[in-house]
Amino acid sequence: MSGRVFANCTLATMVAGDGPYGLVGNAALAVNNGLIAWIGPASYLPQEYSDWQRHDLGGALVTPALIDCHTHLVFGGDRSHEFALRLGGASYEEIARSGGGIMSTVEATRAASDAQLLGSALHRVDDLMADGVAVIEVKSGYGLTIEHEMRMLRIAREIERRRPVRVRTTWLAAHALPPEYAGEADRYIDEVAIPGLERARAQGLVDAVDGFCEGIGFTPAQIRRLFECAAALGVPVKLHAEQLSDLKGAVLAAEFDALSADHLEYLAEEDVPRLAEAGTAAVLLPGAFYALRETRLPPIAALRANGVSMAVASDCNPGSSPLSSLRLAMNMACTLFRLTPEEALAGTTRNAAAALGLDEDCGTIAVGKRADLAVWDAPHPDFLSYWIGGDLLRGRIQAGDYHGR
Ligand code: DI6
Ligand code: FE
Image 1 (cartoon, rainbow, N blue to C red):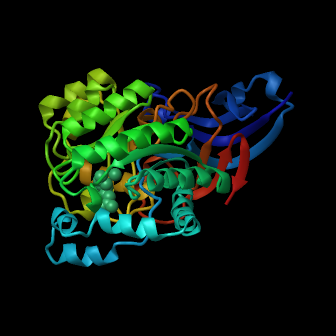
Image 2 (cartoon, rainbow, N blue to C red):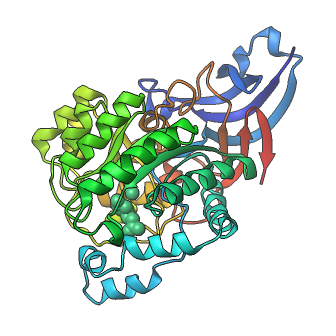
């Protein structure tokens, strides 16, 4: 049995503690059965790999394939008109409370055919893949009936059959309250969010459970009931927390050992140690911060000081983050949130894998992990966060096979 050797490259392994970016110059990488079998300086390549098929990468930079750990990229319609409303002074909450916002996307999503939803989602997936993304988390949350929420996750899973990406699906029925339940959020949790989770899980459609814990979303008490159901089913949780206000959602998430707490602009510094203790990742979403012209910054210094894993994601959605470039999210994380370029790349590789519970098999270049890698036209890994736009991806290594672009 033999595999393949990729030679003549610089590896940014992103292994924590291995120096800046875990860089290995003049490197080689041996791949067998889709898994990494050996990495190191090419001159140390063991004899046993010498007759394996060799692929010269021409001096390129190689990183782990990127991971977008927070998206809402299956949806109908668009909300470009809200952009103008917000520029005219309307707030995201005002638009939501007047029937626009998430609810207008719910109407458009319910009205769209499966083919329309899949087709538009694939465009956004193609955009992400052009930035070297190989794993994408996709949330439900624009159906808000059991059937429509399950349909969104089925379509999300279909993406995996149409494109060479891995998809993780998240049950986000507790995203907004549909008009048929106006004033009855508890009844919605009891009749849709919880029983729908049980059904969707039984059909193998759910990898994690999420909620929108916010004044315009659901209370911590309602999210707690949903999380208790998730815990009973053995499904990991994550939470949209402290995006617009401090309801202590992150503390609730940590109590349930959440994979991640996401957004966090209004997270109080004193609550940061709770995330660290629970091993809950902080998912930073600078696209939403930017698009909503938010001014309150997440407590980055406290997250860093407490050793909380910081991930960076697109939050790709039609309202608060119309963004389908993960590299631009990395650039924004540096410019707006003051992450270092190395933290930004860790945020879309190693820490994004942790935020999805996938850190055993992807997110760094290490022996035994999947050989899903991005090959770049970039002189240094800083360049990936620094340069805005452009077509930097030279190719992808997917399960050990090279695909040039
Ligand atoms: N927070 C967000 O940023 C998205 N959902 C959420 O809970 C926004 C979704 C939308 O506006 O359509
Ligand atoms: Fe989101």
